[in-house]
Length: 412
Ligand SMILES: [Zn+2]
Image (cartoon, rainbow, N blue to C red; front, side):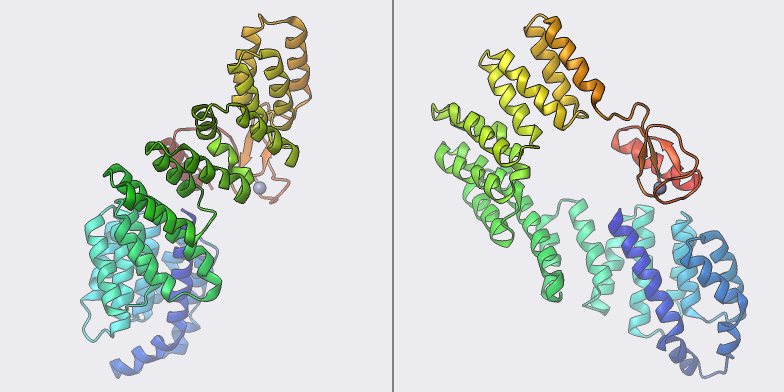
């Protein structure tokens, strides 16, 4: 989602640049007829339109730019922007129609064609026409092989259809042309794509190929946690428990805050080797290194509970609760342990006291502008100082969440 916004903003900025830059001049010369550009650039409609655009008031921007376009019908840039604005407002067919009309114009330069097609690709994508959007972006890369926006969009389309090999090839193209500053991010994305290719090989039961992909992912970025988890799984399925353990233990060294992702696997593997105590040692070591680690306490507690040491387990759950009172997993573990201990009143009282002191949002509300949280409905946000931005915070299933966001956007 963020990527889309960044992309849209970049595109709008790009188009504004185009509008007031060289293309403007070139267009005038090519048409060979005199249009008083100063008149348009100084026209209040054009300037107001751009201002509304910058402040994201799309309806008003459309209104002003439409008037500006009336002053200068051939102005490609204004029509391009207008089409984009219709798309942003959800009027996809209108956007498609505008951009397709532009494409029919004679004498478009290659770059102008590429930009119109890029906009058309975004229209199709927004409208859910995957194949046509794919065609448009591909055509852009044919006309302008280094076009990053088109490449990024093609990559996303491949990812959505789980075409990992194709997505990887495009990311490689982007990486090859990137500056040094972008390299770590490209490497990291390539590593995640390698990991997906590895999973695909696992599904096809091609273990050696899977291992190669996971190892490549880790060479690209040693912090690719899913590749470590999956590589260990492959060795485990080959009954190579020691190798699996050594790979999962790498997570503890390279990204201790993610160690918990390997807990279940490691506990099982240590047990397979007949060394269940190694799991307790591992958790204790993590707690020593990071006293805030509530997950290691929770897992160690669960480990004790499984070995019928409920009272010892409960101590650890209580400690875990102090560090993260919001984790329902901790409360559930406590309820189970209390059940086993027949709800010993002393322990129940201790539980209530611990939760009483914790900072909870009794009735959680959140600012939709800056995500500031509050326990009550506020009319002005203390963080971003915006008015009337608080909504009740509810955790909804992903589909509903998208709808909610749209409703919230509409409300703002
Ligand atoms: Zn706020």
